[in-house]
Image (tube, rainbow, N blue to C red; front, side, top):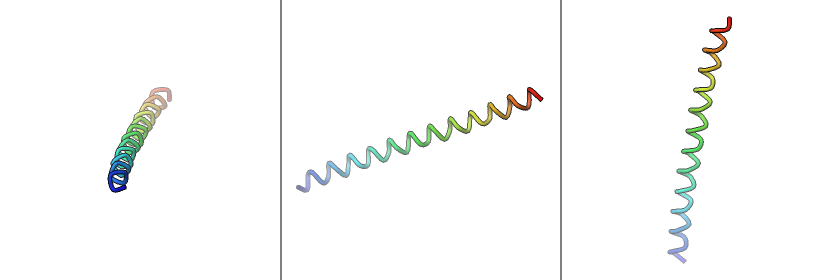
Length: 45
């Protein structure tokens, strides 16, 4: 049972790291999109 708990915690750690990575990618892409929108609006007006 202890092996099962260890592998489960490893799996949970891996999932947590992957979720953090995805959130970081989403956040950075939103920031870049916002910058493009600001540049676009400033060029149009």
